[in-house]
Length: 275
Ligand code: GLU
Image (cartoon, rainbow, N blue to C red; front, side, top):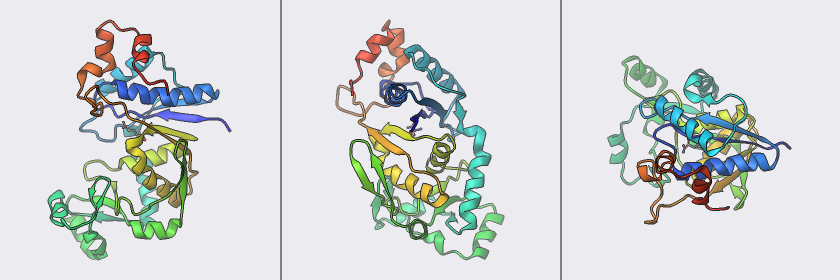
């Protein structure tokens, strides 16, 4: 089978050493296998993402010597696609509008915790159709949540394979009734990434191990939507000399800063782990 990988940065800052490592992980797997390497810009967060960062990321990737196949897919150009997927889930009663504010959710302090904090207690899942309609008509801001228990029942048991960790059993309730379309943008990371991986025929998803919990939601969505499940390779995260995770705000470790300090692409690669 041909290998198709993708690097999917969010343009919320300049490319740093950690993301260059991630790009290398995706790129070399595709190139070693004579496969395809795609580039996707994950800019659904239209307030935090900036076109100038996108341009800078592409320039830094090119400077490092990465080449990608075909056109770059920019998620903000495809909100209509994600809307159609939401309509499908809605028609099956798998999502519901949620009007709760952050503080409403924080107030339910006894709720069990998931990877992103307290699990949503399900308050708005119990609203009647009329109550939902009235609130939407009154312009109350809302997000859309997945009814995780219903989704789990429809999907049935599932699993996925991580290159290093082997077969992992899917935990559909890990994030509870996870947000599937945000209040401030008409989709979510989980929905867009799952849809795009399917649409672009990705066979191997390579990304940082911080996103491993999210894979449980992505594979659940794949099962619900009849999408193939790719193979996963969750790689380690690079840390700064003080042991903390590299963050976009660490300007000294951006590719741009390393370039400006006179380093060559080879010298930058020599800073990255070899596996
Ligand atoms: N856009 C995500 C990020 O920049 C990566 C998502 C993914 O690879 O699935 O962290």
